[in-house]
Image: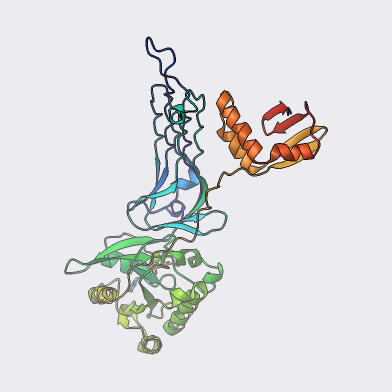
Length: 426
Ligand SMILES: Nc1nc2c(ncn2[C@@H]2O[C@H](COP(=O)(O)OP(=O)(O)OP(=O)(O)O)[C@@H](O)[C@H]2O)c(=O)[nH]1
Ligand SMILES: [Mg+2]
């Protein structure tokens, strides 16, 4: 069914948050005050992407668009760490490109079996057991866990095949695939029978094999989006070799040499690089060829381009075995299937040295805001005295209080920082 084929999807992915560190104190009989023993928060779960050979469409992602790994557990007393959050594995068809949704840059090419960590879970916060220093014998201070990474990602399937079948509609591409592999593409005597790509594995005598992709027919104007074939050219974009199928029967009243040129022009318009790909020209339907002259004109054009030409009848299985052997021999001398390098660079981690936030006064209220401050607030546990002291020290180091003094702040003025509100006190 055509509706079952989806080769582009946009999803939102989020790794788990790290658990909070615990504030706890060791208690034992006869020991009045034990040392701090609050455990660390667990790590948030990662979001991992894995290529799956048995998947052939991104359809699932049309219905489920949000993928979230679980959070780490909070630390507990007696130095017990919180549980790590479970990772989430997203399975995609082999050959799926992960792209940054904003810039469209390639994050990763899922063309091998290696799992790829797309978003890392947040680190767990430290429990107060880490803060036992000689000067801080009983710290009531613990850190909150860090948020997990998140990313809006576009998935783009670009099939992995050694050989791509290209040509006009109805020339016999699917018939050829069905004859040389175990694939069962739909075959019928009208244009655009094939509505989505089919892959077939072709076994060659001697134990070799290669993968062949059959795509919908390309027509003139297709590379400008006018035809059905345009979108599907991406599925032969990685192919090492193109098998260019031409109908030489003349049964549709066209000239095979003209067809050949028209398709090559389409390839060029789609991508000059694809137009340069090695080709084998296949003159099909030779069993019902009415005019030998048509074949000779095609042969001449193929020769001019430096491409070998094979005369076959896919339907009658004539010449197909020799064709498969020639393709296999040619593949041996060609570079492997193209994979794409990452373009996307993860933004550098924010270095959390204090930064002076923005200050403005509205109706007598001091409003203080800034990305650094927002992150700081998210990471401080305000129910805890020492954490508040730490917060205070960070604000002081940012130069905030000095700046507010210069701007004329008075004791008792109301200060608002996101969801925090307090009265200013010198
Ligand atoms: N006589 C003859 N008919 C053939 C041959 N190869 C394919 N056909 C017929 O041509 C018609 C089209 O074949 P398909 O394999 O569906 O062609 P296609 O290129 O995949 O067509 P689209 O999917 O529409 O682009 C069918 O009726 C086939 O039976 C051949 O070698 N000789
Ligand atoms: Mg077809």
